Length: 196
Image (spheres, rainbow, N blue to C red):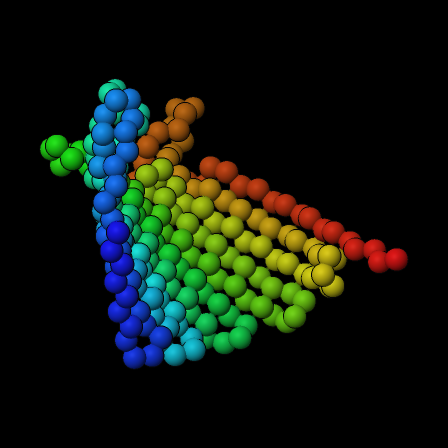
């Protein structure tokens, strides 16, 4: 295994790691080594960026028989804090697997997620999360309001929705290009801490 670190002026660094490894499964030897690279940077006090890329050999266990694959994973993250009360986080994840022998794609999908938090005061905050999954082609949204009087005494109120690329026709759902809200839910939770 080889690891290399590169530091830049300020709070930025890059890490690169390469490794060789194998795995024996059902009498076959598969290559599972590869390389990883990581970039992390803090731009002032308000913005943080990070990225991770991994390329390695993989075993596709559901195959009959299992086969050698090449996987690629990418993670990009960003955090923006324009003030002490507002935080915005965004992330993008990609995962893909190809046949090592032909390069044919077995699967690939990505997930895009955003989270906005507004800390109104030391007791009360609001949070909104939205996430899109390209494999399932659905969009998830969640809203949460939280009031913490003292640690252990908390009230939560939330609402969530799931949107899918469907439409209702002739008594059944069929695939469509636009999103349709297919699931929704409310929840309320509270806890009280009694001190003796």
